[in-house]
Amino acid sequence: MKLSITIVNYNQKYFPRICVEALKKSKTDFDFEIIFCDNNSHDESLEYLKKAHEKGDIILTEPGKNLGYGSGNNFAAKDAKGEYILILNADITVEHDTLQKLVDYLDANKDIGLVGPKLVYHNGEVQRSCRRHFKFFDLFIKRTLLKHVWPFKKRYVNYVMDDFNHGSTQDVDLITGAFMMMPKAVFDHIRGFDERFFLFMEDFDLCRKTQLAGYKVVYYPEARATHYHKRLSEGSFFKLLTKKVSWLHLASALKYHWKWRKH
Image (tube, rainbow, N blue to C red):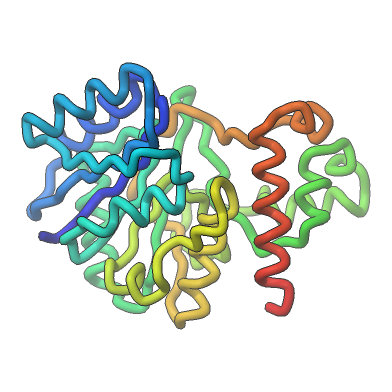
């Protein structure tokens, strides 16, 4: 098996069906498997996944509780048989050649430990899916009016990579976890996602562990996919304070910066 695709689902409604249908239309010269971890969903998505599992279109794993994003992918990866693993959001659709291009690129570049494609929102806007290493204060700048004020604006532009050429293949510090492909041997070597992160920052942590192990993290826009949802953490700092998911984001950010404070 060349590729295993792990997808975590938690009440994603119709997105798993759309995601799987696009994957099944992929034109590849290799076999791949699709492994879902369902985090105790109670909407229509679980019914679809059970039927797709019965048909043999996917492999469905059910831990019986909400493990979070990183732990959910780790749970699914236990059954992965592929040489490469693709960590994929359920709200993403690939193009017919996306998988082939990424696998070919990793086959040709053994020093790369993690690669991400160009992600485009359904309205055609390119998603800023890369980040530079950042400090905790940069997250605050991003959520407030400080991002428009000098000298904080310069820090903001550097962090979110507004100066980045999304049409050029480049080594990067961090790639968002919506779409990450890597050799399964590297994923296993770094022990997958750090399960102390329930939601948010687990993707950036995975990138840093990959680099610490001596591998490159690369943005590869020759391959592309469509992302239908924006990040849960989007919004102003003050609006986010009223959302439960925002407190999860804050907790993960604190854990992340404490873990990597000496690097």
